[in-house]
Amino acid sequence: MDEVQGPNLRDVRQDPRPRKRNRNVIISSIAALVLTLSGAFVWNVTVTAREAEQAAAGAASASASASASASASSQASAAAASKKAAEDAAFFASERARMAAEKAAQAQEAERLRAESEEKQMKAQGWNPAGNQMYFQYLDDSKFSCGRWKCTYVDVVSMAPNGCPGGIYVAVSIDRGAGSIGSTNDITAGLPQGKPARVKLEDITNQGDGFQITKMNCHA
Image 1 (cartoon, one colour):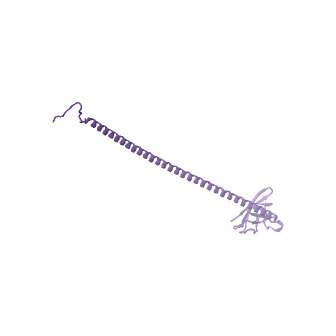
Image 2 (cartoon, rainbow, N blue to C red; image 1 turned 90 degrees about the vertical axis):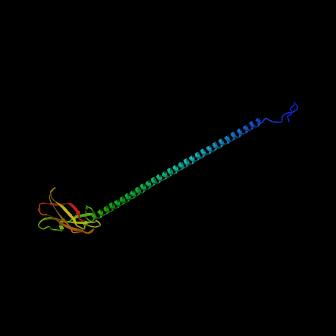
Image 3 (tube, one colour; image 1 turned 60 degrees about the vertical axis):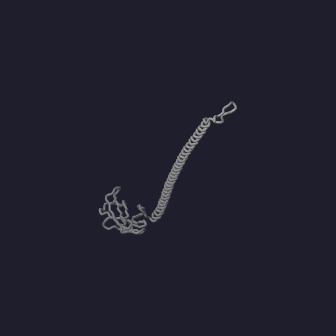
């Protein structure tokens, strides 16, 4: 049957091209949206990764800084402790030296006072100091005789704590006028502290007119 056409009739069939065009637009829009979202996602992931890296780097830097600071603080503390220990050691050494010096000075002063007192007492008894806590006195000529040779007698004593275990050696000059014409000597037996002994000194030339002690030694 033939289709009837006329001015009052319209063809109800539609052109399919506009619908196809719309579909393409929609697809393109969806694709663009997907690309945009994908790009945003990738950018977000990249940014997040970068931020994570930066955060990790910052944390590592902070950790390194903290470690360095702790190490520096530890070194400073160790240096301070070492310095204080050295200062304390120097102070205590100085104090020990000071106290030792004071003790030595006190001992020296005590010895000086003792020696002065001892010498004063010995002089009061007629003894003459010869050094090293030894003393002597000439025996009065009226109290002895010499025999063949001119002579003199000398009493000696040691006030040292141990005395003179090996005896006291005495040497004298034989004088005539203002000069010496010879010498002679003698030694005692071992002596404890405070015990006197007597030595005889002779001028075998018989030319002298006096004797003068020149040396006294305590033999240990």
